[in-house]
Image (cartoon, rainbow, N blue to C red; front, top):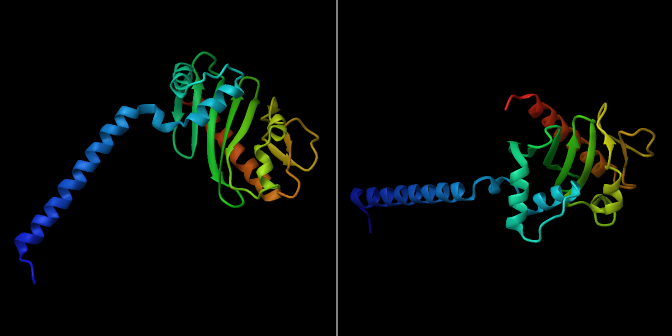
Length: 196
């Protein structure tokens, strides 16, 4: 059984019409979601915790609190938000390669004091019992008031206030974290130089 040209043309027209309708629906959905599509509830909650703000119980309220306070300045693998009440304070979410897969971290920095307020790894695929220790609270504590100058460094033993302890047995994970943190800080500095 062979199809004539009118049948093929009709099928092509149908596929084009269907794909156009899908694109239109996605655009409407994206507009309805707005800025929330660029930030996860987990990022919002983590940022508010790092800022020692009381975190609302519901996601909608947490988004509202975060959106009132912060304005997004960059998108992509490293997202940044500037505090509109305290312009030297920035929140970042950075995603990048760990040893075994993607890791995502959320941090808060203050450019006036050149310090990190805090940092937390919210997603990771590192080795259980080794690299995954980057998600433990005791690991995250060392980033409170960590100096950003000249840059954040991984160390086997901390001697300077810009260093964090590497996870024993997980040097590759720790080095990946160091790289990702410094990329995020670089993005924050770059965004802070732009005129709003």
